[in-house]
Amino acid sequence: MSHHQVNPQLSGDAGSQARVPRLSTYVASVKQIDECVSACVSEVIISHQNLARLGTLDSLALTELATYAKACGLKTSLEWDILMCEPEFHQAVRVLKELNFENFDSIRVQDPGAYEYALNGLAVDNSSVKKLGVHFVLETGNHNLEAILKWQNYGLLNCGLPNEGSKVQNGLKSAGPIASAQSKVNLERLVLSIELTEASLTEIIANLQVEVELLGLGPILLLYTPRHLLRYQVVAPNAATLFATAECEENSHKGFRIIDNQNGTFVFHEKDYCLIDRVSALMRMNCSVLRVDLRQQDSSAVPDYLGQISEICEAEKTQVGHQLTRASEGLAEAFKASYPTKVLRCFFQANATDVLLKHLKNKNIERKDEGYLGRVVDSTKGLYTIVCLEGNNAQLRVGDRVTLVSPAGTSKEIEISSLKNIEGVQVDEVSASRNSQEGADCDLSDGHEYAVLPFVKGVLPETMVYSV
Image (cartoon, rainbow, N blue to C red; front, top):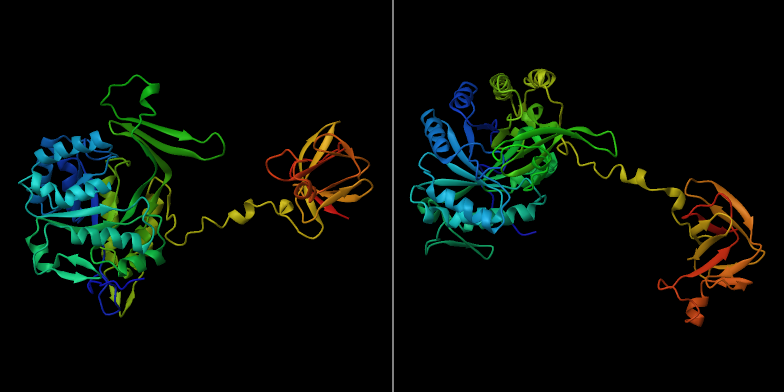
């Protein structure tokens, strides 16, 4: 792995002081902005209906809201995260060209094409862009350090045109501090995935030169498609937003939340993601921003939730030596108990998605080479049982005794009273080596030899055959 130059302030060195992550959340009204100010939220995300997945604001309302938020002392971020083919991308660009960016501090993008346009095209097309940070959302995929560093380095090296005095590091031309100061657009933040463990996040953040944002509380998106999966089943205006819950027919999973709006259909997990009780861990890894998404909660309860979360973060500011206190532990547990949606931490503690894989394996059908002859591939009542010979030099002869081990683990010993080859010809023996010796005698394309036995009661396909 190549050496990475790290910003000491973001590196999480022992000597640096851990800071409580700043809070960020979504707003769509003046009332919600006032609630953020009261709860000490430092940044608000504002969503345009034609740019953001769950956006509801038109250009005028969005601009007015950003102006009010800035007047209240909040950082403002424009969200652009819809799925886009070429027509949708150009439509989004047309919207962006007409927006007033004077009261936006940053733009959030998720599509790589949107990332490129935000870095190098937006300031050219829109003269109102004076100083804009880019927040690149890497929540889907990008689970390793090298991939995340590639996205970071691309952003750092493509923020406007480098000057002649740019530095060359690791073979890449860097814009350097002078060019960054002159550029109107700069990569400011990376938003990392909820599928990363605490250990992975700690390593990744220590190697980055930009801010890192994590989801602290909010719904878990399972599926997003531009198709309207609910709308075709009901009569509803095109602009209507439909809500539903769903359950799985194949198992007991239920409570999936579904939203169908102008940008497509979204399926969310029944539980919300929550790191509110892990603020101390987020401080140790130097997470800069904690995002709270309460858009699916009762709007009347949102101010209380924001206030509790802010109180939890404030409680973590107290330090004793180098050890963070657990002053917020009781507050966090009380918050989770009162929060109406069940929560989980997904992979933050550990990624244990492969733990159950060993239980999915059927050890009864795992091949044991000692005495192994083959496996049953077909058995028809009253007619035949067919064995595919797979063992080294496997051979079945009339009069041999074999053991049959079923997928359920039961075993049965039988004596072979008669044999046929796959062509239906009565033979005294069938050998796995016959096909290689005689070549044309087997007309099956897989190259195996098959022995046809009289029907054996209770024997199923995948039953293993062993010599006695």
